[in-house]
Image (tube, rainbow, N blue to C red; front, side, top):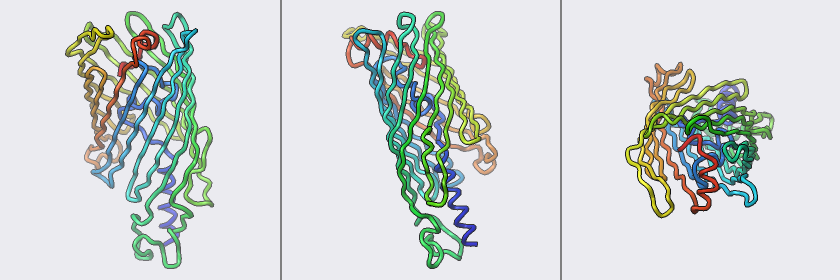
Length: 343
């Protein structure tokens, strides 16, 4: 019995470790969707953060936090652009407090076509991941003593509770305009192509499985004061499939010009919803205030766990700051890389 229990816990910990997390407001974490989405926005500096708390109605809440920053620079003699950035992620899962901390620098190159209307972007992202769990938080049956393993055993056959490994990803994206003030992008990315070992036991050769992602998004000018944004991601990892889609409608409540740099600042309200196929329906509200954006969403669980969760999933919050460093950068970047996703 003690062996079976240890194996179950081991598999649960390692299975969680080997899969990636996603956000309901997935469009707010572009570097986690595709490294090549770095730098595709109106401006040349972007800082974004997201926080997610889920499943507190069923078990110990899962918490996920992320922070990213990007800066875009124009090349002097060409219309090409270069973006450098950093993605930081932290998630804590379950009773054992299984935690991952990811520090992932990113660099992307934007090749200009058609007089700066279209850009082809290639990017790579890679860095260090550190993961650990608290064995003392685990509870076992009467053959174990307060989570310390059976008499004479150490950590229930785990060789370690802390691991570190390298991780790397790459992506390709194309963004352009069509018609009157409409923009779109498409992209593809491969995450974890290093296939790092993520097991807490030396005997188990559990590798981090590659994750393939295809992305698409479009920004439509649907009125003098209105825009509509549509997103979609299809994800494949280790035999699993996931489809995420979302739509947001934006209406400008107030618009005025900052005469110091001839820039237009808006106060806009955005409302819409996202859908995670077979798992959750997600109402979303978002507010744009000049260069700042705040969003909130809630998962309405529709998966097989809906009876236990009573349709409750979790809250998610996001914040972003998008701006330019100076008027020269505004002209060379913001006007050329017209953002397919204005937020």
